[in-house]
Length: 169
Image (cartoon, rainbow, N blue to C red):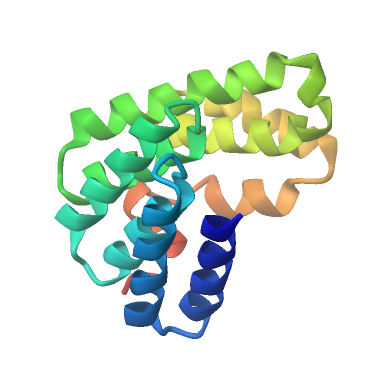
């Protein structure tokens, strides 16, 4: 619980752009629970915004080792690999996340998360250059609930998606 509390406090600092203080709290959260992967994801996001991409990659690698089933972590790892111009590695990460999102989509116990997982799989497929994203986007469009998402991302390049995700300029 201590690690979660420290992570929550760090998140509040990140929102207020107090990243140095947030990094200190995130390090404390990691020390409090060495298996907790979320602080590494938060640190990775800070480092991406600071354009410290090697540090960001190190942190996301910690996160994906601690929780290899966290699909969103693989997407972020793909983003970082892409920023570092490692397109082949980025594509592997996106495809790995697509598999995980597909497993969630097909899991009857996760039925209430069907559309968000479909949305995430579509975005991962688009980033990976996998044309299956068109079918997912069409299904999202037909649902009537995700039209804004589809319209927003359908024509964006990977670079534009990454810049927007991390508010990079």
